[in-house]
Length: 271
Image 1 (cartoon, rainbow, N blue to C red):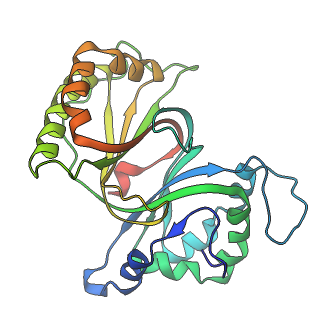
Image 2 (image 1 turned 90 degrees about the vertical axis):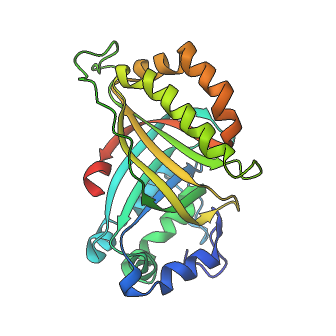
């Protein structure tokens, strides 16, 4: 974000950037930055240096753990995308969530010399990204099934899967249509998903997209299942399919749905 020519991996929303930088201290507070990442096959450095690493490896070199620790930020979720269910392009490689103590701290980190020194690796490795500033929503509170008693429990070959839903609601419908359709879909889908062991790690409202392709988004949801087999059983359930056709299609204008294998998942504790 600091290169004078601007990042190659997305467009900065200057208005949201100004909000992040100028929120009054008494109104400021934590922000969860949700990152969708698509990597270059081979890292491409602007200074022309020979590239001997993949885009993913370059992004790993970028990971600004020291800068985050210095400002009180932390990575609260990271997962590689195993399967993309909805949303054709781009095909995402990784999802991560970074919690910052304040909106202003996110902006201030960009000017830190230690952060800038590492950013060259992100610029080289990232083909495309969407970074959304989010706030936690109240989570539905269904009873959570014991994973030892669900039809498809976690195994050594098929462990927990966090399904990430990025949603833009249909704002062309009447004001009360999309929310009602989504509520109806959630109730029907929940009735199917709970017996299969779904755990809601976090639902977030998107307050702005600092980097992206110009699209706006409304929510990001993180739902964890005991296994990919459990999630696929929910996907194939006739009652959920009917609810999807009847309500979800009417409510949602654009979406990405990806199944990730989390290596870090502290979303619940972070809220």
